[in-house]
Image (cartoon, rainbow, N blue to C red; front, top):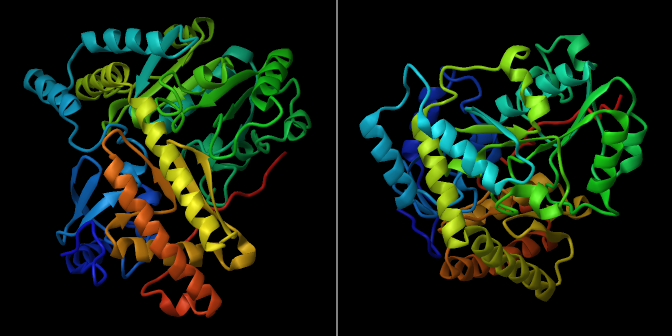
Length: 437
């Protein structure tokens, strides 16, 4: 079994493959989350099923240990098995999970969110980020009396957004044409689409590219003048870029903001926040209810997670070690004379950008991933950090990066990256249509 070290061989994944074979035909696409599935990892080298997590380490079904740079695709902000969060869950579990009436945690967590997220006047809960963004779209349409939506970034699987990507089968044509897309940092692409039919503009306030030329401020002003609501999808920025998310960090007010992932350290919770005059439509006009919206274990986890973030300066720590990792990885690239890779993004979550002129980015990414896996690092293109990552972890990651960068450079020089790959390369998550109607 491999561990987090410079292992002599690639991990044995026999048990993973057995489960994978059992899932064939039983679970369409194999996975419930595409980013966790087999198409996003080198099939033949990467593990497919994980069974345990502690801190920032995970173990697969074959017993191999990895230093995790995915952190459950974002939710593990504090780390796996984090004591304060797990204790809160266990204590609540002793008293019950879901009840026949409302639970006090619904009020307590809403007050806590109001304290830390700027401009929060009202709060509603659900289970996923996609639900939260869809509720935001519905109430925005109700409030403005308009139907069209403009978006930038990824916003979940529901019809209003899925119609903008290539995997849009099952989304009725009229629904597809109610949503248009604009380019981040291109204010003119928004201006060309913004008119009196637009109910809301929704975007991830930042992904990896920093806003340029007061982009977010200009966008907010345009929305206000046009009578359209501005919605920040803060699945990644919330409780990571700052405790209060992008509104706090960039000092730009959104009319509505949605959160999930980091807020509850792995428990399923989606949150919609925003203006009271908009959100009050949920009282009598807009339907947004679900049996598990007030499920108490997730709310207990959120309360404990936010308290830990406040008391232990979690955000500052994550960004500090993230800066060390980003700077170190960049320096290694410079020392190696590698200019076709770049480390971009904010310290809490960076990514490796690959220049297509150097070769097929998916093939190059696959080779990097393969060699990281051999050295006990679970990586799929991003460096997503948590409070459980240590300075020693960063030091080890930089040693691994130093080695695999030189391996990739050698493979490119010898034009045999594909031959060195021991499994199937990763595939695109999905393709956008480029729709900008």
